[in-house]
Length: 339
Ligand code: NAD
Ligand code: UDP
Image: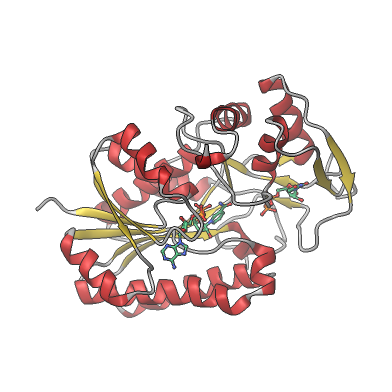
């Protein structure tokens, strides 16, 4: 039986794009998702893009018996673990839910992998583990700290994975620290479909452009940055998807665990992103300046040296392309997967 790659959270934003990249590279994929933050209609879109090269299992990563069945039934040989909750504000209000889902989910998955003798994992970490960074660009060696419960769940998972690989070198783990994933598959068939008002900047801009929202609130114009607005490292989700493929290949080849930043290395301000989106799409983006959002850092962008050296990977798409693809998705699907 041909081995499969298990993608937990594969119906979600980054997972669905990574599934396409893996299938295009000839891999067999099994998606496990409880659909708590995604729509089953993404599966039809994946079929349109990649045919029937994947299986879907609906369920929760905290369900040990289900994991045992899925790992065995699909001859899984490696796992990409996206499944998790990611809303910072919600994590402040409901920390136990976040620890249960993100830490409990990762723990349950690792135990099942050990039972099944599957020891290659790519883990979705985040630049949030750097807290308010002391220096930019941020190298992987920067101090780690969490500034909210969501960030803390990522740090606890990273610590658990570090302990595991130290205890048993048969574990090969890639911890990928994503910066700000944006954009969509160039077909416009899959993309980011937040439920309710978007927390993140790019989907908010896209919803203003398509007429779903009236006006973008820009959180703060008094940061110590060239134009006063916050600076981030936006990375095209298809570049991010390729990064996962590169990480899996390295785990198999080099037989070594890896912790790397996935970003472009370029800092882009809120104002620059809004202006680029308007220029590329020809749509004005109504906006107003409001107070800073609690917990936001001024500047955050990646040192990408290690990703280039260890994965042979670097981001290819620029900010204009990110806006173009985000807009194609949003204009073809004004209300996400529900239309
Ligand atoms: P997403 O919400 O679109 O996808 C996550 C998927 O996991 C969803 O489809 C959801 O239904 C599923 N899921 C959640 N809990 C589950 C559980 N217990 N069992 C099974 N399925 C479950 O989010 P995303 O943006 O694709 O993020 C994927 C991963 O990357 C997350 O772990 C997130 O924390 C991390 N990450 C995201 C960003 C970002 O800005 N999008 C940045 C850094 C890290
Ligand atoms: N931002 C904003 N308005 C919004 C959402 C975000 O001005 O409606 C700003 C936010 O303050 C930050 C940048 O856009 O400077 C990126 O925010 P996002 O939530 O997308 O990513 P994160 O803060 O997690 O890096």
